[in-house]
Amino acid sequence: MKPNAEDVAGVGTVEGGSALDPGAVRTRKELGRALASLQTGSGLSQAAAAKNAKIGGATLSAWLKGKAIPHAESLTQYLEALAVPAGPWLAARARVVAAHSLQPPAEDPERAVGKDQRVCIGLKPWVDYYDRSEDAEEILAGILPLSAPAGEEDAGGLFVLARAIKDLVKQGAVVEVVTCYKELSVRVGSAKEFWALVSADSVLRDEKEHLPSRKWLIQETEKAVRARDEERREQAGQVWRAVFLLLRRMGELEGSDWPPRVLVEDISRRLKGFLRAQRVMRWLLEVFADDAVATEALEQAMDRYVAGRFPDWRRARPQRFDPPLVTVDDHGLCGYSFQAMRLPLTAADMAALWPQRVTTGASVLDHPPYVLGAHRDERGESLTDFLRKLLDHCREITALDSEQGWTWALPTAPEWLELSGCTTDEHPYPWGTEAPTPRRANLRYRGEPQELQSSGIRTSGRSPSGALDCCGHVHEIVIWRSGGLTREAHGSLTSADLRLAGGSFRSRAEHSSCRKFRPLRPAPGSSRHNVGLRLIKHRTEDTGLRQTALQQFHANPHHNGG
Image (cartoon, rainbow, N blue to C red; front, side, top):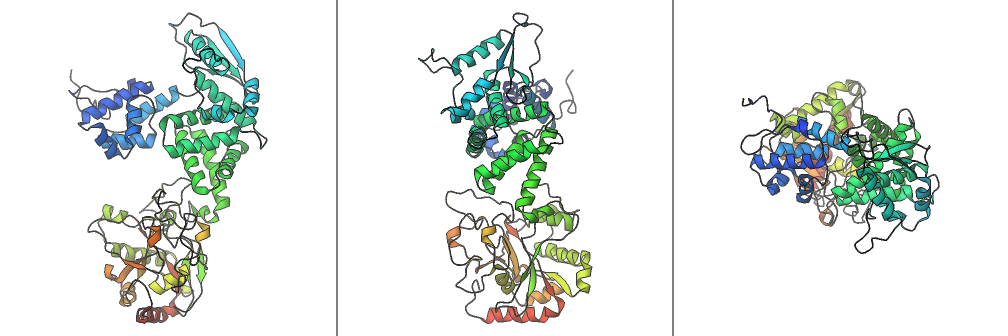
């Protein structure tokens, strides 16, 4: 009987209408063949499927050939591009991941030959050798071949052991290793699993700074992550899974502080830069996406690390809207002091300010800005309508501030120059006159990735008042026309009243200046996806001074961006 549409929903069909059953997928090659059939059935070429899913062609090819297991997020994008429900296939992926883990393989009752053989290998001699070997980098990186090179069949040593393990497992023997770390007995099913355990064993017993294990594992992991090499990532992932397998066997993952904390601190110290460490830590969370215990242990360690380095991030899951503020003194442009948000409005700020509008969805490693425009696509409201409602909402939930004589507002152009420290032509940047660098500003640099990153991580780019991310990151909305203040008070702002300040992550570094203001000019019905805002608080008694300062700013022929 031909199944109806509901019977095959979430399964997918290949050309000709035959159903694919994700429940039957158990191995990497089976998953690859199934994904290839789904692509064929969709009518898309491999290149078109990769483009629509925003994944590399080489990465997709590795999936379809069964050489790599897709990450859950990437697989979801691929299935969406093929118009196939993701749920059943994500479950199939999870089974494949489990099959490739270091858990003991299920015994095949048909393999009676050699099934009673048991071989035990002590890891101590191997770990001791790696700790003092000149080949430690290659061994721990997984670069060393697991079989002898052509013409060197008598190479012996490492190659002999690798071949022996392969042959023993093929004959049905049980191969176990005894670790140096806590003398754990772990069953292995391949030479790759053996090397992963050796590396993990060396990492966990590595308590001296001169030992190479942790250092090389972290550095080689970063190389794999940056290269986007699926095979190399899988090698590194296997070692990290082995590390956590051993920790779990000793009960040192649940309720224990040291293993994840030390590993996270080592990643940060070895890679010497938050952005580099952030990429590796984010990838680790992907590796353990299907392991709730390991994920929780890693997130707790990462949360402590981030909170210690970026205190403002302790509001990553705020209960109330209370962004950190800086005091901005008058330096000749405004004639009054005011307060400004230290960072542009973040997704976490919006989640606290307006929880029904947005949830952060960010990991403990991310503190993204709130990018204006997403609400346009979902709700169809104009930018100026959104700004009016946002300010009204801020003032409602912080009514106490109004009683104290303070109110929230969008900054005017001169206020923004004051808070960024760029009040004269001699100071085009918050830090002074030196050209921007990736450590100071998230701009577009030659040879560097162009991406929106976490807020507040470039502390060397702070302004004299302490504001961060004024240069690059996201464009910030300011009131430009003097009549805009009046219209803001009456809820009738127009796009012509506004301009953009500071540049964004898409702005070329060599053409940037925090003294330039750009027209808003959004495309009809769309968003630039690089625009944010930073609110200020001013005394209600200074409302008239704000109007005067904006008028005088435009009367000065030396201001920029007019």
